[in-house]
Length: 437
Image 1 (tube, one colour):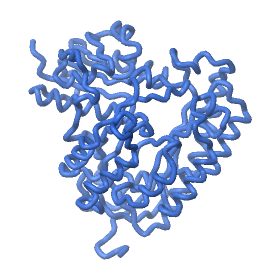
Image 2: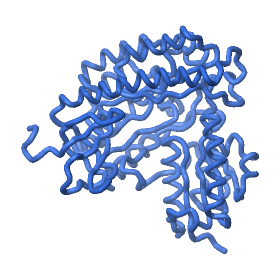
Image 3: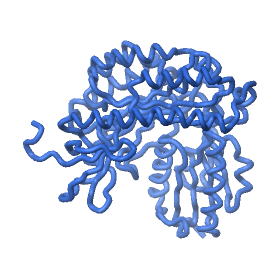
Image 4: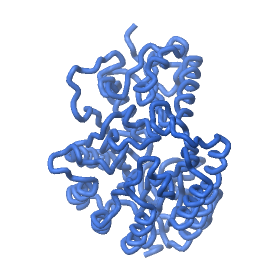
């Protein structure tokens, strides 16, 4: 029986969300019908993650649950886990096909499509829509750095840059389609352009976007930058951000640790924590107020209590507004999995909890600081009982307190912060005409 209905499930990062959307658009264009209920699907596609051992375990649970809901559906698994542990995934119930990341783009031509013999350098995946209110724009894939704990080079391969003209076209297309905030995402934005003629970098791409799109969209729409590498931060970054009209005053940095010795063992000795602090001090001259997120990894092999304290001290010195903190998870095939000095699991969890607690305190402090702002600009993401919620330019969650005319999803609305809620979120009210001017 020919396939008529399908369901897609995404696990993992923003890049996976983007790729699932591209595949969804491809299948819909072939005449297939997406269904929200897996039980109504003839084919189910799971776009997988493998960044931690827990991610692969979660994948197994998701696949088994989907099979229970749709016992007659054919299940396909693609993504990073499919690339690394594909043979194992074929043994899961209901799974009929596993397509590694390298061949994922071919699936846009249908559930049975095979990858061509000659794969293009940049896979032909693009989007015109997005299920979420803030659309992702994929600008880079893969990583050539090989941090000692990371499986990304094994799952996604070396760094590849999306052609700059394609990035500009997609941003224009999505803005014109009604999106008012886009997230520029990649696996390692620090490697952008190394594979392109002339070796342009991420900041050159931002400059091009500003020159091509800024005149039309500045003040009407905005871009948010996904995770940056500390090695990208310097004078060129400051110059580019100073001239930017579309970029939200918010950065997210892949810091991982505040201990130079731990960073060296991670294969990330190319920057020092002090350099990050110096850059952020200079950034104050451009953005007096900005959101700052960080990725932190606790309990890396060889990390001592003193090393952990160095990271806690680093967090204390940073103008953090939130952090993503993870206990180290050994991944087979990575050098760190065989390093001596493996930290016991309970201690990794305890150190992660201490870092999380320190970051949460800074998150609440920043939210209280935002109460001094006359207005914020919130992108509307969801609506519960007629009350909209979303994130402001500083990447703080906001919830409208006043009922009334519900602003359209994806729109940018002016709001005034009135109260700090639990978990460092804000209650806001709409800015009335003439208020705050």
